[in-house]
Length: 621
Image (spheres, rainbow, N blue to C red):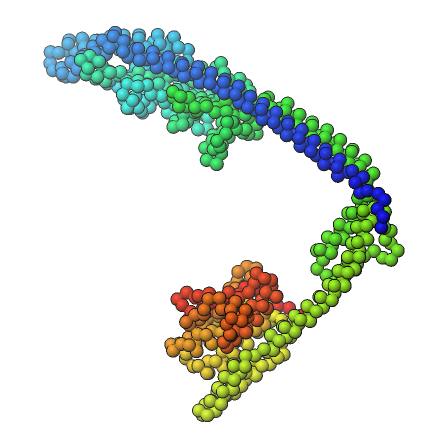
């Protein structure tokens, strides 16, 4: 056929492909812009966060330096020494009579010294706006209030804990996260953000007497700081801050209660730990852009939590607008292209469907001709598609003829092979059975002959009359019991047989005469070569979609690769070796190449032969 037109005019695929490439390139460019912008935002937020960290820690460093100057001030040290001397003198005087005047003078000295100390602390509290109040705990545990201290209560247990931690730092400043509610200071951060609770940062430092280098404990200075005052210049309604001590928890945050709970739940989940510069989180159903930095001095975690909508909302809308416009344009162009190219495309689709139906068809070969058009319906086109149609239909006709011939030959061959397998009976077994009957008659044990003859008759009848490829497991077990009853009379106590087959599996199908060859193999290869008793176990196990059948004996074992040697002829079969080979072929023919016999060494010695079959209920063929 002369080709007059070109299939290249079918441009719809080209249009869609070009538009798709343009779409993805444009989308990739938009995503690249978004990524660049996110990095820009990250750098900006990092700079702001660094500024916040610098501001907070500079303020803390200033407070730390101020407290150090107070504790090392010569006047403060003099008052501490005077207080300790007065306290020591009072301890010496005790309740001695006639010392009341001296005790009164020393008590007055202690009070004057403490008043002087408080006067040194108050200017620090009033000068720093981030400080709420301050206290001084004398060495004897009495608390003196500084500026604003009367409005804040510290439980004795909390006071003792603060003193303990301050002493452990041996003069260095200690930081403790606390919270205040109704004028009472409590340890830790309120896990559920109690209503009207305010976070407080407690700074504590022990005082030591430097006089004569005794370094005697001279009391504890406690300052209460409001973290919110440290970061007022950074936080806004859409740019929030969270400061957290890895050991003590949240120090300060401007997050709402529900947002904070979601953030802490995310942070404390090990699966969310990622090595990335920023995170995008949903807190209380709102999307946030989160960056994190760790301070170099206090090693606190600083989180900048900003509204994602405010930062990237315009870019997200641009994505949606672009996609909607592109999809609309694509629909219009594709509609026009489809209408124009339907004449060219439809025959290819039809031809492809027929090819797919042939490939997936599970019907007999005669139905292959159903894909061919009726006489007069085929109107060949004058282009590549017309030539393709003509060649395809010619190929279908030739393929149908070849498959028909080969299929019938294969069916006949398989039927002949299965028929031979069904009627096969080991001549050696038949000879041994007849010889057993003669021996029973000669040894005056003729009462056992009817049982042997009946079992042999049942075996022969089942072998010759069965026309099914598969029988029930129950029928196979009956056949196997007949075979074993003959062998049991022949070998007596030397042969011991055990069946481990659940009753509920008896109605499932199994290839006919599949267990007997394996048992006969154990008799030939195991028992006949043993002096001691032979134990043979037949088992079937349910494995879901399959059943695992196995025959195990305690004989000397079979040589490695025996089945392959029987197949290639390098090893002559003994007993029913042909049965093993044929059973392996039958299993592969019935179920597929992944099925077949597996011969392996049994636990404790001997041989284990097993095979899998599909779990199917028996039906009449």
